[in-house]
Amino acid sequence: MTSPNPAGAPEARPPGGVVTAVPVRHPGRWVAGAVVVLLAAMLVHTLAYSWTDRYGQHTPRYQWNVIGQYFAAKPVLLGLEITIELTVLAMVIGIFLGIVFAVMRLSTNPLVSGASWLYIWFFRGTPVLVQVVFWNFIAYLYPQLTLGIPFGPAFFHFSANAVVTPFVAGVIALGLNEGAYMSEIVRAGILSVDEGQTEAAHALGMTRGQTLRRIVLPQAMRVIIPPAGNETISMLKTSSLVSVISVAELLFSVELIYSRTYEIVPMLMVACIWYLIVTTILSIGQYYVERHFAKGALRELPPTPYQRLRRRVAVFTLSQENTILQIDSLGRPGPGQ
Amino acid sequence: MWSGKLAVQAEGVRKSYGRFEALRGIDLEVAKGQVTCLIGPSGSGKSTLLRCINHLEKVTSGRLSVDGDLVGYRQHGGRLYELRDKEICAKRAQIGMVFQRFNLFPHMTAIENVALGPICVKREARSVAEERARKLLDRVGLADKVASYPSQLSGGQQQRIAIARALAMEPKLMLFDEPTSALDPELVGEVLDAMRTLAEEGMTMIVVTHEVGFAREVADALVFMDEGVVVETGQPREMLASPKNERTRSFLAKVL
Image 1 (cartoon, rainbow over the protein chains, first blue to last red):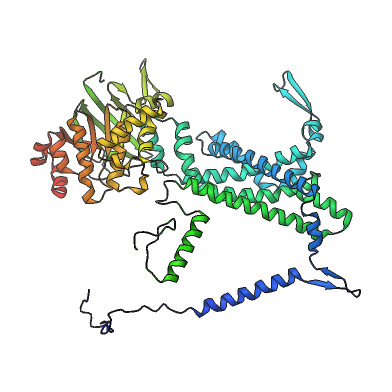
Image 2 (image 1 turned 90 degrees about the horizontal axis):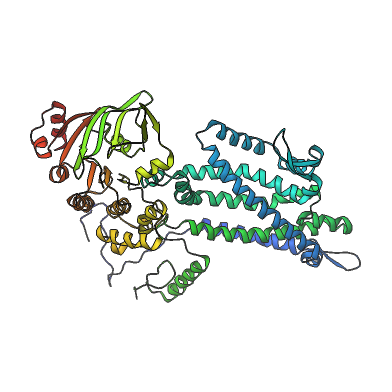
């Protein structure tokens, strides 16, 4: 492969015929690495720091002992359970309403798409906190909930106070609010699917409903999942707003404790650590859901963390042995050796 | 299968998008069991006419019928009533369509793509539909690609799956909308071969194409369209050798 090239003519080959390639140096990366290590050390120091008072007693700045004491306390765990219930129920309502209102918004009937627009306009345009409080006090507006024909006979009566407990008010408020945001996410997903897909489905004789369910929505999921995961994580924390209407979720539970003990910061840390743990679990779940809906869109599915770890280990051990091998995407050594 | 003699009949078919008239009075007859090729410059309305035949586009005026039935409408006492979604779907199920950009469902494997129509529209059992899908994929030479996703296949392979998908509905009429225009030159042959086999089996086909060679060999009738009207119709060999119309002549001079 030696072509005549007067400008960049290769030098004569060294004895043995092997030309070694020297990678370019990156001093900037070493400096950046050092800065990160320094900052990490400062963080560890401040988290582990403790005061010593004049009696010689050590008190950690972040009162880790208090955090440990309450971390798995029963009221905290009950609060965590209610937080998760609120998040799950609100997201289920939100996703359902989101799909309904997204499809309505794309309807050719101006009344239907207008109704959807109005819903989104109202629930995106008012603060969630106000919506939560509003639903809690719905009994002032409607002491009796009646199911019947307008201006006609009524079939069922409920006392609003009995049906709309603070927990129910919280679920309704968060779910309705989420529906408005989800509908825009779902609509973006539906719009991202190529029109040719709908045409091909129609040409086979599939109805509009079948086309939406079997062709458009499964493909839209690829676009919907990342922001929907974001919304779920956001909802986990937004659910803490219902503490204002005395629902004993995670934040309200720790508030109850610190109003007694005045250990405000450690109790807030307990709540934060739990929020972080649940968020982490949700992110992992999201990764696998995304992977599921990537089927067919990518030539090859992205590796799971376990597969990636295996590949890293394989590359590392091989580079140690200084052998050239092919490694496939699952980290298995290929037929190179 | 066919009740009348004519597979497709168009009388004064017009289609406009706002002020733009894509079809300006099309008269056309396609006999059953025949292969008709539509040729003409881009923007001449070939694809629009094809899409009107299975009601992907609504005609603005004129009469368009498939096997004697009006497309998308029912005539009753001098008036045309638009058909319901369900009725239109039932008509479309009898007409297969192959697109320029394949339009395979990317989230499904080859066999799922082919079996979807029968399962969804004809309510066939999955095992029956998949058995036929397997045979059809074998027929277009893709027996080994049953479990592949479209993104893992070449354009020619994807288009052959798209043909198998349309055939799975056992259509009486097949529409091809520039089936080889999006393909690399070396992949055109395999798709044309699949279409040629289909034509030899007696399928009624309407093909919008730029492949004049295919039209000459396979087509029973050749239709030249320009600016939304049918300019010339004839027997392919004669028409390609000695076009009567001036516009046909100048178009063929550029293409051949």
